[in-house]
Amino acid sequence: MAAQKDLPKYTVPSLTPEEGAKVAAILQERLHALNDLQLTLKHIHWNVVGPHFIAVHEMIDPQVDAVREMVDAIAERIATLGVSPKGTPGAIVSGRSWDDYDLGRASTIAHLGALDEVYVGVITAHREAATATESLDTVTNDLLIGHLHDLELFHWFVRAHLESSGGSLSTGGASTETGAAAAAEKSAQGKP
Ligand SMILES: [Fe+2]
Image 1: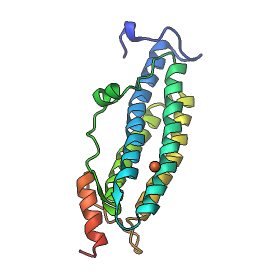
Image 2: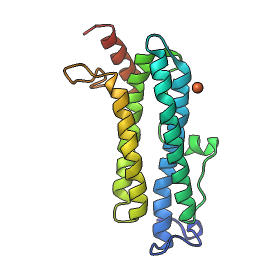
Image 3: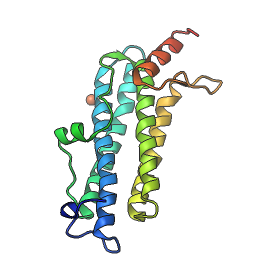
Image 4: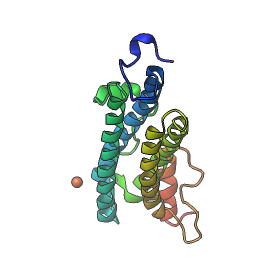
């Protein structure tokens, strides 16, 4: 539970200040994650090379726009709960529990493999946050569920590039961005 000095002076009606602080803390982590995601997506937009460049380059921008809308909605929900949202670059870096995206200039298929892993991480944590707010604050829960509709759709857009006609993913079994990138590239080159 948040210390007394960290509690908001007010929060939304029907929540206690303790509950408001707890929901805001859950949202703050999602704010870091989606701020990181929208920057990472732009980084990919700028760094993809090779065949299918324009398709992947142009697929990414609507995802950036949508994630930026989610960032704004999350930050404004934190403020609505009576807590100050933290959106500065330093706060993102010190507040996150994951490493920077691994790839620089790389093939479209390598970036898509790594992005598959990125979306797995973001969506898994977003679902956990949605579950954690289910009984605590239905409005925040609804906000996060709304984001998941789009995040899971975007994840499918990425995975459709990695999927065989038999329905398996070339990144299947990978657990790191570099591992997924290497697996996707190997599969695209026709190697078993
Ligand atoms: Fe651009």
